[in-house]
Length: 227
Image (tube, rainbow, N blue to C red; front, side):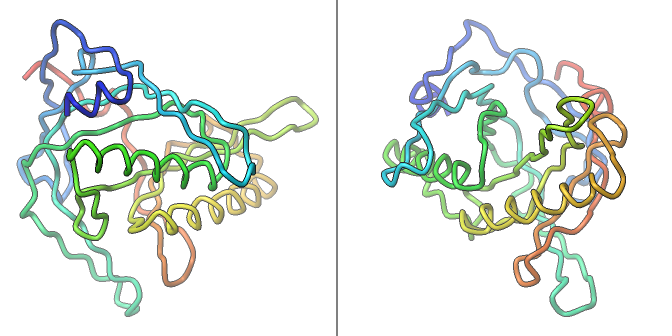
């Protein structure tokens, strides 16, 4: 984790600590997760990305923090069979996880794909991870919203966190779909950032759509305290 943080140009603090995060969800039966809140093991880094085909200008994606926490279980939602069954695999619960959080500098599904490709190359070169998404050793949660130039000025749509994406191509497809869905939703309702709670949506790759899963907790809901 430290090797990855240094390679991402992060600042490594002299002191770090663990925090307990209250987390009531079926994939974490003990109802709390040991994580890092206000003193993470690294923060304020960046990763450079560019496109050989020139579809976007070379840029830096700022890294907010790379912190350690323990993993939760894996929820598997079988929507393809029409039964909407859910199973939970608890085998990885409690294992170490490095969470790399970026600033909102990614402006398109293509940039997201490129960022993930660069990150995978870096982590693989450092021998930090095999980055096998099918086995869960690299996972992506994408937060997305739109900034729309409206008559009343620029309007931001509510942020949606998209999960259950099993490939970089799936990430690109999910973001492209979510952009169109949020645009249509804004035209229908006019909902702005802050009007509704943050939502978590799962990507259904077979159907090519995102589906609502739950409203996302904010940091105050987790009731962080030192562990």
